[in-house]
Image 1 (spheres, rainbow, N blue to C red):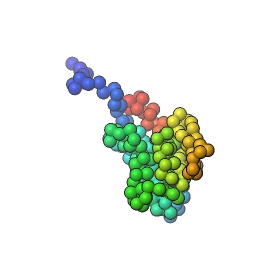
Image 2 (tube, protein in one colour):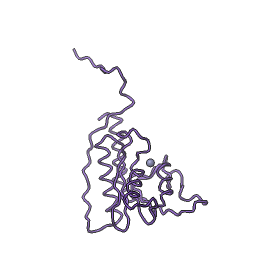
Image 3 (cartoon, rainbow, N blue to C red):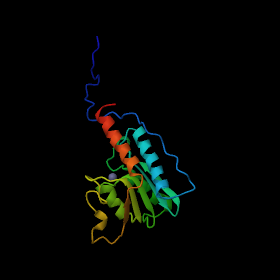
Image 4 (spheres, rainbow, N blue to C red):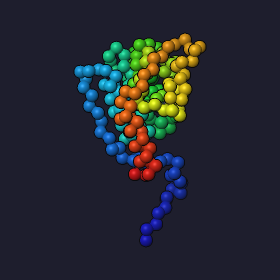
Length: 183
Ligand SMILES: [Zn+2]
């Protein structure tokens, strides 16, 4: 007789199961290094996050045409609320160039940065942030708040959005919708 029971006696409802990822990695041409090229790499990082049971967000940092960081969300694996793709990428990039000041570098990220990551973008003196999908609730680079436009800031951060927006927001929407339905 079928009997469903959680043998550990602990409710699993707090940690939701990750649905299988239905998306394929993109294959950007390395010949044309435009914003779409870097965002496609960030998209592929987001897919890695999904495959590792994380909310799919990916980030890439470029400096002078060179990729100096590629990272994805690792909050669940690290048990660390600061392990967002952007934070990890900023740390990687600083280590790579041996300077915490990322002047002239551009961060590409599949979702608009949250308050923490938007603050880190300013504090690391990134030159530019390009994000794909806007976040009207938690986005602090235009969606909910424009932290980069606080008049007393002495660092000017350029923000662009919309590159690969449809693909990146579709990935997030699909992830949350599948997870709600426990697919
Ligand atoms: Zn964040």
